[in-house]
Length: 112
Picture 1 (cartoon, helix red, strand yellow):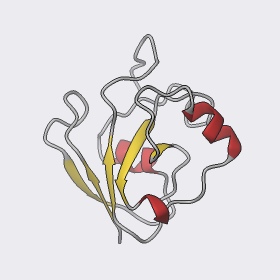
Picture 2 (cartoon, one colour; picture 1 turned 45 degrees about the vertical axis):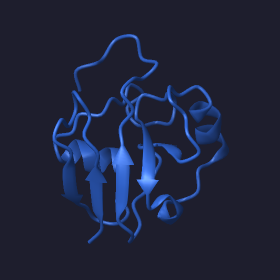
Picture 3 (cartoon, one colour; picture 1 turned 90 degrees about the vertical axis):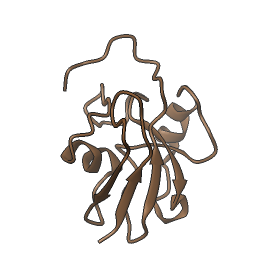
């Protein structure tokens, strides 16, 4: 079973975390199922950038980003070459190291 190492995030995961997850789930769902309340304003429909993450290790093991995701990522705060929308990034068999950016372009955080 692959692991997702979540780097510390001041608000969402201050101490960081190591999650055991099943292959085939999205990074977003894995985080939410483990009480890491990453924003997902569009309810995981690939219509915003609030669930943006940076995949520090294991990026190549993820499914390929579709054009819609790539277009949205252009608007994400702190975009890097290894950025993904966590709602679209599907865990494969490799371990991942994920960083949740400090900010999003969302003006008001929803209480999911």
